[in-house]
Length: 203
Picture 1: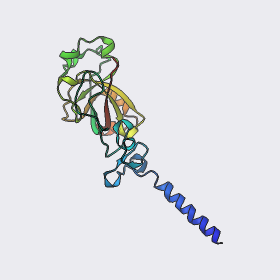
Picture 2: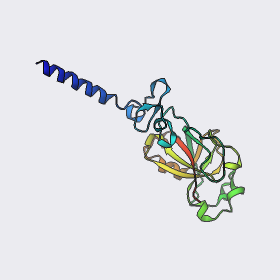
Picture 3: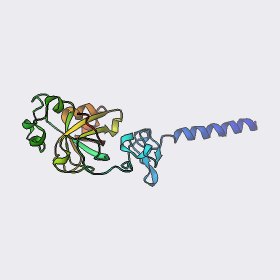
Protein backbone atom coordinates (compact mmCIF):
# COMPACT_ATOMS: atom_id res chain seq x y z
CA UNK A 1 0.00 0.00 0.00
CA UNK A 2 2.83 2.35 0.90
CA UNK A 3 4.42 1.59 -2.46
CA UNK A 4 1.22 2.60 -4.26
CA UNK A 5 1.20 5.93 -2.40
CA UNK A 6 4.78 6.63 -3.46
CA UNK A 7 3.93 5.73 -7.05
CA UNK A 8 0.90 8.03 -6.95
CA UNK A 9 2.96 10.94 -5.61
CA UNK A 10 5.62 10.40 -8.27
CA UNK A 11 2.93 10.34 -10.96
CA UNK A 12 1.54 13.65 -9.72
CA UNK A 13 5.03 15.17 -9.77
CA UNK A 14 5.56 13.97 -13.33
CA UNK A 15 2.24 15.42 -14.47
CA UNK A 16 3.00 18.73 -12.78
CA UNK A 17 6.41 18.88 -14.43
CA UNK A 18 4.85 18.12 -17.81
CA UNK A 19 2.19 20.77 -17.33
CA UNK A 20 4.78 23.44 -16.56
CA UNK A 21 7.31 22.37 -19.19
CA UNK A 22 5.89 24.95 -21.60
CA UNK A 23 5.75 28.11 -19.52
CA UNK A 24 5.41 30.96 -22.00
CA UNK A 25 4.55 32.12 -25.49
CA UNK A 26 1.97 30.58 -27.74
CA UNK A 27 2.57 27.23 -26.02
CA UNK A 28 1.11 28.80 -22.85
CA UNK A 29 -1.63 31.02 -24.23
CA UNK A 30 0.64 34.01 -24.80
CA UNK A 31 2.00 34.21 -21.25
CA UNK A 32 5.31 35.97 -20.70
CA UNK A 33 8.07 34.82 -18.38
CA UNK A 34 8.40 36.08 -14.83
CA UNK A 35 11.34 38.32 -13.85
CA UNK A 36 11.69 39.56 -17.45
CA UNK A 37 13.20 36.27 -18.62
CA UNK A 38 13.23 35.54 -22.34
CA UNK A 39 10.71 33.13 -23.86
CA UNK A 40 12.30 30.71 -26.33
CA UNK A 41 10.71 29.50 -29.56
CA UNK A 42 9.80 26.30 -27.70
CA UNK A 43 7.96 28.04 -24.86
CA UNK A 44 10.62 27.88 -22.14
CA UNK A 45 11.98 30.75 -20.01
CA UNK A 46 15.70 31.50 -19.80
CA UNK A 47 18.50 34.02 -20.21
CA UNK A 48 20.94 32.56 -22.75
CA UNK A 49 21.02 33.46 -26.46
CA UNK A 50 19.11 30.25 -27.23
CA UNK A 51 16.19 31.79 -25.32
CA UNK A 52 16.74 35.51 -25.98
CA UNK A 53 18.01 35.94 -29.52
CA UNK A 54 15.51 36.99 -32.21
CA UNK A 55 17.56 34.91 -34.66
CA UNK A 56 16.59 31.87 -32.55
CA UNK A 57 12.92 32.92 -32.84
CA UNK A 58 12.60 34.18 -29.28
CA UNK A 59 8.94 34.96 -28.55
CA UNK A 60 9.02 37.67 -25.85
CA UNK A 61 11.38 39.76 -23.69
CA UNK A 62 13.96 39.14 -26.41
CA UNK A 63 17.37 40.78 -26.50
CA UNK A 64 19.79 41.39 -29.38
CA UNK A 65 22.74 39.03 -29.42
CA UNK A 66 25.90 40.27 -27.76
CA UNK A 67 27.80 42.40 -30.22
CA UNK A 68 24.78 43.13 -32.40
CA UNK A 69 24.84 46.80 -33.20
CA UNK A 70 22.44 49.30 -34.57
CA UNK A 71 24.73 50.27 -37.41
CA UNK A 72 24.58 49.78 -41.13
CA UNK A 73 27.45 48.37 -43.14
CA UNK A 74 27.21 47.64 -46.86
CA UNK A 75 24.87 44.90 -48.07
CA UNK A 76 25.89 42.45 -45.37
CA UNK A 77 24.19 41.47 -42.13
CA UNK A 78 25.78 43.98 -39.77
CA UNK A 79 22.71 46.00 -38.81
CA UNK A 80 21.70 44.01 -35.73
CA UNK A 81 18.37 42.45 -34.87
CA UNK A 82 15.16 43.34 -33.12
CA UNK A 83 12.23 41.48 -31.59
CA UNK A 84 8.51 42.14 -31.14
CA UNK A 85 8.37 44.66 -33.98
CA UNK A 86 5.06 45.69 -35.52
CA UNK A 87 4.84 44.90 -39.23
CA UNK A 88 2.08 46.37 -41.38
CA UNK A 89 1.67 46.04 -45.14
CA UNK A 90 1.81 48.20 -48.24
CA UNK A 91 0.80 47.59 -51.84
CA UNK A 92 4.10 47.69 -53.73
CA UNK A 93 2.98 44.80 -55.98
CA UNK A 94 6.44 44.47 -57.61
CA UNK A 95 5.38 41.46 -59.69
CA UNK A 96 2.75 43.59 -61.43
CA UNK A 97 5.03 46.52 -62.21
CA UNK A 98 8.00 44.47 -63.39
CA UNK A 99 9.95 45.05 -60.18
CA UNK A 100 10.25 48.71 -61.18
CA UNK A 101 11.28 50.65 -58.09
CA UNK A 102 10.58 53.97 -59.78
CA UNK A 103 6.92 52.98 -59.94
CA UNK A 104 6.79 53.03 -56.15
CA UNK A 105 8.29 56.51 -55.72
CA UNK A 106 9.94 55.00 -52.67
CA UNK A 107 12.61 56.52 -50.49
CA UNK A 108 15.29 54.24 -51.93
CA UNK A 109 14.22 54.40 -55.59
CA UNK A 110 16.82 56.90 -56.77
CA UNK A 111 19.58 54.88 -55.14
CA UNK A 112 18.74 51.32 -56.20
CA UNK A 113 16.19 51.49 -59.05
CA UNK A 114 18.88 50.84 -61.68
CA UNK A 115 20.05 47.62 -60.08
CA UNK A 116 19.69 44.53 -62.34
CA UNK A 117 16.29 42.86 -62.47
CA UNK A 118 17.73 39.72 -60.86
CA UNK A 119 18.82 41.84 -57.90
CA UNK A 120 15.50 43.71 -57.61
CA UNK A 121 13.40 40.55 -57.84
CA UNK A 122 15.46 38.19 -55.68
CA UNK A 123 13.50 39.01 -52.51
CA UNK A 124 10.18 40.53 -51.57
CA UNK A 125 10.18 44.21 -50.67
CA UNK A 126 9.77 46.08 -47.42
CA UNK A 127 9.91 49.56 -45.99
CA UNK A 128 12.01 49.93 -42.86
CA UNK A 129 11.97 52.28 -39.86
CA UNK A 130 13.88 50.47 -37.13
CA UNK A 131 13.89 50.27 -34.19
CA UNK A 132 17.29 48.60 -34.67
CA UNK A 133 19.37 49.63 -37.66
CA UNK A 134 20.81 52.82 -39.10
CA UNK A 135 18.11 55.06 -40.54
CA UNK A 136 18.72 56.89 -43.79
CA UNK A 137 19.71 55.82 -47.27
CA UNK A 138 22.53 53.67 -45.89
CA UNK A 139 20.02 50.87 -45.27
CA UNK A 140 18.58 50.92 -48.82
CA UNK A 141 19.06 47.53 -50.46
CA UNK A 142 19.90 45.71 -47.24
CA UNK A 143 18.16 42.45 -46.36
CA UNK A 144 16.23 41.29 -43.32
CA UNK A 145 15.24 37.81 -42.22
CA UNK A 146 11.72 38.31 -40.88
CA UNK A 147 9.94 35.82 -38.61
CA UNK A 148 6.24 35.92 -37.80
CA UNK A 149 6.19 35.46 -34.01
CA UNK A 150 2.71 33.94 -34.17
CA UNK A 151 3.80 31.31 -36.68
CA UNK A 152 7.52 30.89 -36.10
CA UNK A 153 7.96 28.40 -38.94
CA UNK A 154 7.24 31.25 -41.35
CA UNK A 155 10.51 33.02 -42.09
CA UNK A 156 11.22 35.11 -45.19
CA UNK A 157 14.10 37.26 -46.38
CA UNK A 158 13.11 40.69 -47.68
CA UNK A 159 14.97 43.63 -49.19
CA UNK A 160 14.63 47.19 -47.90
CA UNK A 161 13.43 49.50 -50.68
CA UNK A 162 11.69 52.28 -48.77
CA UNK A 163 11.17 53.91 -45.38
CA UNK A 164 7.90 53.14 -43.66
CA UNK A 165 5.16 55.58 -42.76
CA UNK A 166 4.06 53.91 -39.53
CA UNK A 167 6.90 55.51 -37.54
CA UNK A 168 8.58 52.30 -36.44
CA UNK A 169 8.90 48.73 -37.59
CA UNK A 170 8.31 47.36 -41.07
CA UNK A 171 5.86 47.98 -43.92
CA UNK A 172 6.00 44.70 -45.81
CA UNK A 173 4.80 44.34 -49.37
CA UNK A 174 1.33 42.82 -49.16
CA UNK A 175 2.54 39.66 -50.93
CA UNK A 176 5.24 39.12 -48.31
CA UNK A 177 2.78 39.90 -45.52
CA UNK A 178 0.36 37.24 -46.76
CA UNK A 179 3.11 34.60 -47.02
CA UNK A 180 4.16 35.25 -43.43
CA UNK A 181 0.61 35.41 -42.12
CA UNK A 182 -0.16 31.69 -42.08
CA UNK A 183 -2.13 31.94 -38.83
CA UNK A 184 -4.43 34.63 -40.26
CA UNK A 185 -4.06 36.94 -37.29
CA UNK A 186 -2.14 39.54 -39.26
CA UNK A 187 -4.93 39.90 -41.79
CA UNK A 188 -7.51 40.14 -39.01
CA UNK A 189 -5.59 42.93 -37.23
CA UNK A 190 -3.89 44.56 -40.25
CA UNK A 191 -0.52 44.01 -38.57
CA UNK A 192 1.59 41.21 -37.12
CA UNK A 193 4.39 41.07 -34.59
CA UNK A 194 7.71 39.94 -36.03
CA UNK A 195 11.38 39.51 -35.23
CA UNK A 196 13.94 40.65 -37.77
CA UNK A 197 17.63 40.09 -38.29
CA UNK A 198 19.90 41.87 -40.77
CA UNK A 199 21.41 39.24 -43.06
CA UNK A 200 23.74 39.09 -46.03
CA UNK A 201 21.67 39.44 -49.20
CA UNK A 202 24.06 37.23 -51.13
CA UNK A 203 23.55 39.45 -54.19
